[in-house]
Image 1 (cartoon, rainbow, N blue to C red):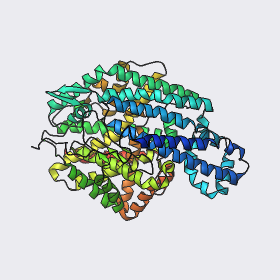
Image 2 (image 1 turned 90 degrees about the vertical axis):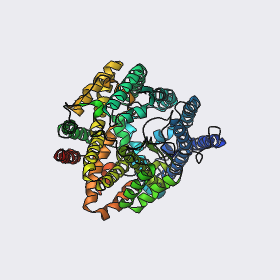
Image 3 (image 1 turned 90 degrees about the horizontal axis):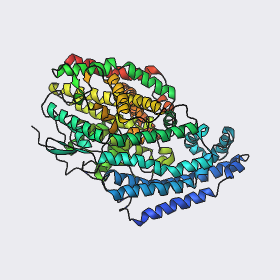
Image 4 (image 1 turned 30 degrees about the vertical axis):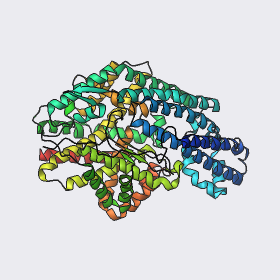
Length: 596
């Protein structure tokens, strides 16, 4: 039996290459510089409209203005990233929460100084703007950023109303803060131990059924106790969104997310339809087969991600995980491995779980003139190795796009998940290739479950959000009503072989995306099925694929998802594209069925 996994030696990041602490004088200096740059930009107010008939002059002013805007963003976002990164490992520290909240308010005041800028850009007609970009060649490089600014043109409000929303934003964000702090303080006693949220979720993959059940029930009780607070956060933020969406004339609650992602609503609808059509052949069938493999008539919800037998699962030491990720990235292209290696050699990864650290994982890009940071809670399981690959995929992507500058490197969510999910896929292929026959069934089960969690579960989350926001239009929902929607949607996606036991109705409450980024979740399914298409292209011609893939990542946000995928001969606007990805998942279930 494996010894208990020790986390003491896992890496923790150091943020002193950003700032040495809350009192670092460079923080105030950078905020002052951001304010100076915004005031300098404010001197150009009215100039874009005044020179609209003189293309060369307008182009020069536009180029200078966007440069000032990007420089101010770099100064302000660097401080913001420091506050967010530091607070995410200390959610139990009131001083960091105050620092983050105060900074958010200060940043909003600074940003308001240049509010006129994008509004004035959108007063220009398409022909006037294009003539200016042609007349002043240097300004032409900003076309992709301007495309994204212009996309919001139909939904902009008056300058005064836009400023009001900026001024209100820090107060609204405190509802997200309350949600985070409530979950960060969540703990439960299980078999004589006090477990955090991350540890409770991790325990539900334990080989022992009794331990999984105890953790699941303890988490349900802990969430139920906090349900009214968490429901209030969700209801309040949904109402805030409702009001803003109404003023901005968005046709539905997901529309602003589609706009930010530069994705067509019909592409997302095609994705959702393809996944829902595949429920029966993928998730329903897999869970029925898994129950059979475990000698059961059905699975309890805490068995979804359980190992197939009660043997202790393999534990991966940190150095072992590091080696697997680097070897997998190297097989794609040396540049990917070399970039990832930098994050291991520098104190840029925080992997050690500890009290006060929030759950989850991310790679924070900061700004294009600073390196990203990787955040996760590593516990030595196979899925933690894949999470490490996922976040380092993000980090490599963010690093490759840095030469574009902060504004152009910023990638829509639909493409931002590409490198991360691709990284996971590379590592899984390595795991599978090195497995023996006895280990293969478990690995295959894990891969299918990862696919279900990334595609089926995230589309179910998307459908839950859609139903919640539709219901919220008619008034506030109680925790029980929210739980009812949750049970309905999750039951549809998981199928009859999974029993949603008492207490599962509270599990919506720990999904932070519902609060922090409404309608974000479909991007995971979008990215996963998109990557399945890319990986098929790699299998066809690995040598030709690598440079095209590097170009896709290095392009950051300069191309739309349709343009980016055209080079590979892929069309994500067609339902058939997404259905092909679901067919790949179905084939994995076929293989699993043959082994069972």
